[in-house]
Amino acid sequence: MNSLNINQIKEILPHRYPFLLVDYIEDYVPGESATGYKCVTYHEDFFQGHFPQEPVMPGVLTVEALAQVGAIAILSMPEYKGKVVYFGAINNCKFKGKIVPGDKVKLETKIIKRKGPVGIGSAVASVDGKVVVSAELTFMIGE
Image (cartoon, rainbow, N blue to C red; front, side):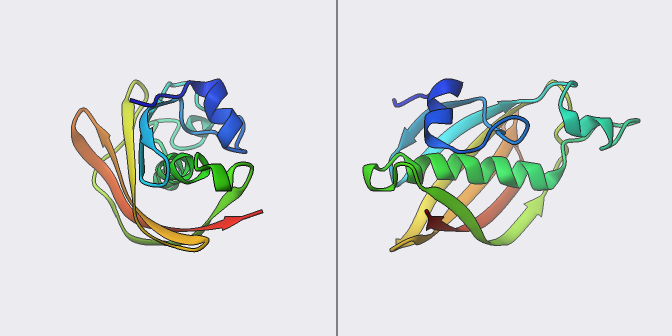
């Protein structure tokens, strides 16, 4: 298994606090897949406004976390070291549950198609084995 701690993730991804949404990578296969985790705490900045009376992690940030995990799979390939991955599209996105403080979110992205600098990842976020978000993410590798 290939695991990455937060410092190793920061060597691959350009994201930084408060927008780095992956705490650690449990396993990854360069160019194929990655599985990571986000440990959600009440102290996340977004809970101040989403929603103060019922803190819920914004769904779009969960999609971003899934994209960051997919970016680990792509950017860990030697030929893409130092590059940036951008969104090309978000398709078939479904929100099936809430993520709240105390949740440990499992983030899994598998690269299902790649042609040149463009590809598609199948992504699933789950909490305690229950799927909370799923999507098909199109990415483009940039400079």
